[in-house]
Image (cartoon, rainbow, N blue to C red; front, side, top):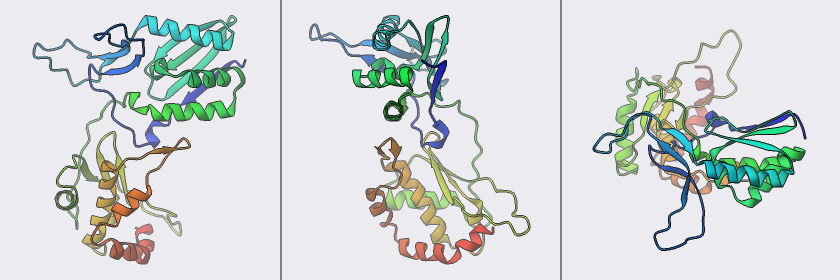
Length: 294
């Protein structure tokens, strides 16, 4: 067995789902029901960082995680049997490193994210192959398992954000409100802002690509590239870009072969419901070179 292995989760590159609310059960270990009132044992439970108010209002800070020691020991024993090795297991609440291991004094020291407390035997067998042999297929399976449970990963601490919606030529707040009412029955609870302006292009250098809009589900935030806040960019095209990102807020993003699909066939069908869709696509093809030079 090697000296150490690690699997990290590219949290910032994905449209991450917000973490559990305070007091919500983040994973459970299934047990045979002994009666009608038998509930599953809590294996990992988030609790608030401060005392609960008398009216049971949880504080806004993201809660800490407490792991059931019996669940940790049971997983440690299962993995020791699979690996046939001496093992010390620590359960973590890391945001990026889901699996890490090192060997000290003939003992494998393993750190696993708490999502593995509820892993099925098939996943634990893959974990054993990965730790023992560095098996690539096992690594792929583990990546899929982590991706399917990314809602268990605590989001990064929220930073205060400044929203800038009023541009020199386009008001994003007004566009967002109009689109929300027209296409989403006012149900989109995200926010919108202009993104940061990139440094000016120097000399003969030219951008090869440009992201006109992005959506971050963790923040429920749509960002629009400031290159669109120019007099030659028509209002209908800015509306199309905002509409496209709003769709990401309401449309599911399934995982296939370990990869998240952002633009599914269903997404493309609904995208075409935008009234100026064809016109916006034609305009983009005609003027994309000007946007790249902005």
